[in-house]
Structure formats: structure tokens, C-alpha cells
Image (cartoon, rainbow, N blue to C red; front, top):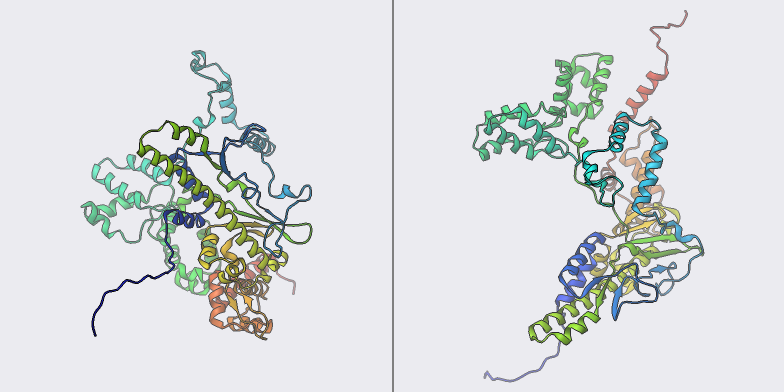
Length: 542
């Protein structure tokens, strides 16, 4: 076979991931907080991007500026339910927007309202507040010299707010007083840095001595001092050690209490008979000891400031409509309002002479325009996916979680003619505010469980809800086992295995039937002992 050379032309299609396309895909999966951070970085990087002003003069529009967030297409995301085209119907009845678009006022008005409400609760003025008010009213040297007063415009109340004291700061202050040797302070500071927000140290401190170049005895000595710091129970390595430290502080760590602390697993199982045997006490003493354990603080570090939690802001609002449907709209407060100043670009292009500068500003204009298009496309895609989810899960919004239907990404993607990966990115880190609470968009995608009678499949979330209802309604004298729950679910038309019931029950942190029987018998015994009269003091007449 001879080898020859020839030219061939082939035509094929391929997807090229341009930087702009990668940016658009990235924006889809960002949460509203991450999106705001990303846009702020772009505003600092791109001189042609500007933040849209909410207080623009009436009748005056930005000069040749393309704005996202206030346009008719992207800004007005009010959807009147879901029609055949999946689009948004327009028009609201008067007063319906107050449910979601209620204006809380400015920060000063909110603080004034809160102060007024607190005055109604605390009618008497505390002594410290009265003394502070008298001190502020009295003339001071700082005021006389014109340094400023509470009536000045430069007066900042936040400058007088005390910083939040963390657990590490509180322990470090005590460390500086407890030790004078530099080596002990170094060991103590190293251990304090290992304390978590609950006040616990890792169970294994074997590497501490090796990293610090100290002996294990030195680390143990410093740890013994740290465990005497405030709050009581801090720097413990386990729950038993934390409770033991607090009991020693109260001078209640006797041998019986020590045995109880060392067998907390029996207390968790409500095995009172085994606890009595281990501690060597009677019923009355074991009840008093358990009461003392419950009054202790298992997480002493939580009373101090910890990491601030970000408030969850919904991306989509769903509210009932007048025609029995549902209105779906985007949260306009989370949409970044930016614009491209093309007038500024036109002026610069006339004055710039260097090719490098022209290329730079051309790239800035292209990136800014593409960012606005990506933001607009993101808003449209989120609204489209949310509208289809509401259409698919109409029973949930009308009747509750028991009517949640099994749903997957492919069903939504096929309905709106998008790819499954796009729907997956849109539903990541997005929240929907509904009449039944605020849920993540992924909450509405649940697995399917077959029906026992061959009918329509059931949602896994609805089955979990059904299991929880059965357990909550069970009789304390007839606790439902997993097998009994399976039988009742099959009688309701749900075909489910026993291991699946156990998995759902453990996911909801519901104990087993044996543990629930002990808990409810213990609770019933406490109620009966409180309700029944004391026969030893008032015996019945013969």
C-alpha cells in the first residue's frame, strides 16, 4: 500500500470557552452576596463602569448609558403566575405589593422605633444610664475647647460603641495575669489559639509539646491553669472534662458525681437503673444529680462573640395572585445596578493618541458591555427557572410539604429548553421566599419513591414529612418501630424499605424506637411524680 499526501477540508462544530462565556457561567452560580462583591471589584477595575444612582433627576437620563437593574426587561421582574409560555403576567391589585415590598424606612427611623419599643419594656432608667446622661449634659473641657459635642454634625455615636470581646481575647487577658514566665505564656497562648468557639480544646494535645519544643509535663501544667479560667469549663478536651471542671468549681465533684460524669452515655440513653447501680445511690439522689448536670453549661465559650452570620437574602419572591395562581418576581434589591458611561468613552477616544491606550479602553468598553449582558441574562435565567419550579410544585405552595412532587433537573431543563448544568448552576446558593417560608431552590428537587399501588410516585421530602407526623402522633405506650412505620406507609400507598425509613429517621435526628420509649417513659414518670400526692406524708386512712 503506497503512502500519498493530500489535502482535506472538514467542517465541524465545537464549543470554545471564551473568557466572556466563562464569566457568564461563573455569574450564574454566584449567590447575591458573592455577586455584589464581584460587581464591586469590577467597578474598581473598569473605569467605564459606574454605579447607577437611585436619585437621578426627573426627566434626565444618563448620557448614552446602558443601565442594568432599571430597564423594562431586566428590572421589572414581576411575574403573574405561570402561563403556557412560562412568561410573566403583568399587573397587581392595589395593596398586594405591601407583603414583600414594605419600606422599613431609614436607619435612623428604625433605631428610633426600636428605642421607643424598649422604653415601653424598661420603664425605669438604669442608674448607669442616668449617670452617663448627666455626664453628657455637664460641660466638659473637650466641649469648651470646641472639640465637639453630641449636637455637632461630626458626632459619631458608633465611635463610642465597645468592641465585641471574643473568647480568645478574654482568655488572653487572664493569661497575662496568670503567668509571668515567657515560656509558660507562649504555651498558654498556643493552647488558647486551639480553643474553638464552644470553648473546647482538641482531644489530642500530643503535638503541642513537640511543636513548641517543651515537655509534655509543662504543657499539662499550663493546661491545668487554663482550665481554671473564666468561664468555668473552658479549655476542656471532652464533655465529661468540661462538666467535671464546673462541678469542681461548685465543690460538688464527689465520687458519685464522678461516676455519673464518666458514664454520660448511660445518661444519654436514659438508662436510670444502670446509673443508680454505677453511682451507688437511690432514686432521689440520682434525680438530684441529673438535675445538677442539666444546670451546667456544656458549651461555655458560646456566651462570647463568635463569627457573625450573614443574613440570608432571598433571590426570588413568590406570593399568591388574585386569580389563584402565583406571582414570581426577582428581588430587585439584590440586583446590582451598574451602567456603562459611553459618553466618557467617546470623549477619551478623541483625546487618546497612543494605540496602547486606545486598546485598553476598547477592552474596558467590551468587558463592561458584556458584564451588563451577563447580569441581564442571569436575572432572566433565574426568573425562568424559578417560574418553572413554582409551576411544577404548585401543590406544595397550595397545600404544604405533603404535596411536594418528585422533581429533577432534567424535567425543569426540558420544560424551559435549557441544559441541566445551567439549571444546576442557577439553583445553587439561591433562595426563594414563599408563603410557607424561605427555601433554597434545590429544596424543591427531591428523589422519587414508588407508589405501592402503581400510582403516581411520591417525593422523598413528602415521605420524610409523613414519617415525622407518624412519630409525633405515636402513643407513649405504643411506640412505632421502623417495621410498623413501613407497614403504615405501605397502607398509605408508599412503597419503601425499612432501611430507607431508618435513614430518613436518622437524617431528621429522630432516635430509635427503644430510645423514644425510654424518653417518653421518663417524661411520663416525671409528670406522674409531680401530679400524684405524696403518700408518705398524707397516708390514706385505713
